[in-house]
Image (cartoon, rainbow, N blue to C red; front, side, top):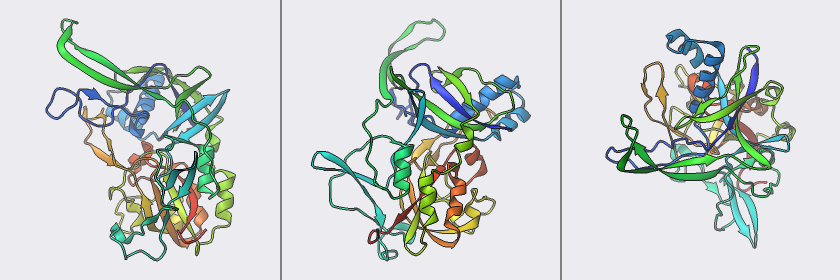
Length: 381
């Protein structure tokens, strides 16, 4: 089946739950907090549902559900469409330290301390990360463009562009309605947080890469909480460059020195690993787990990691017709530093914008899309 880029364009503010309980039960909140992007499995489920509708498939048939479940969908990526040009935006890498130098924002790189492994209280004999200078960190920006992240991965200086009109939070107070009478329920006020993607001279969309049958055209549908409408557009000509690393990154790997350089893996989407924050494919005892593409040709040794706070992942299982159990994901933007023990370092580029989660189904759902770059130790350039 040909691979295409699927663009989902919000037609109204969308709500994506962040996993916190919401409702009248004990411990639940009356504020439905949301995220700006859906989880990879939420977007994958939406696209698979639209594929079933376009192909006239019976969603009640178990074989059909099994076939749809196996359809790879890699995303989501926040995309800015401006003057007919599209730019991807990803969460900033966790090894980037943003600070003020006078009135100007600067970016420094967190790097592993060389020779400090085993002499700190870091888990699994990992090296701590050194800050470039003692400064007060600034919040920075919620996203970096793919061009800015490319320069960061190639160890080039990064100067962030001007702030964009990011998708903004739109909180609305609502009241519960009695399903039988259609009237408001007294005292049942609650608040819902939406993400508004609109704009006048530009607009934000959500993109993913997926496999579709020839000639299949997806229609508009409903995504997220409260079934908000979204449009769907397919781009077959853009899919070819999805797995192709930028030239700057290729050139950086061409001069890679295993004695001085480290490999950096940055997550573009949340990842699910068997060992929590740590990929199980780093261990030889992976059981039935399969190595992600390209990683069978190089042996990596984990040196350090900059990992954000875990994220809850759940959803609804159509095959069992019940909620999925909560799982904990490593957030996008998390960074892993590796030494190259054996093999060609450039082999990891075969996994560019491909998922590196441990389980095959999680990879098909888009968890753990990764980009790769080079780095160094704190006492080296």
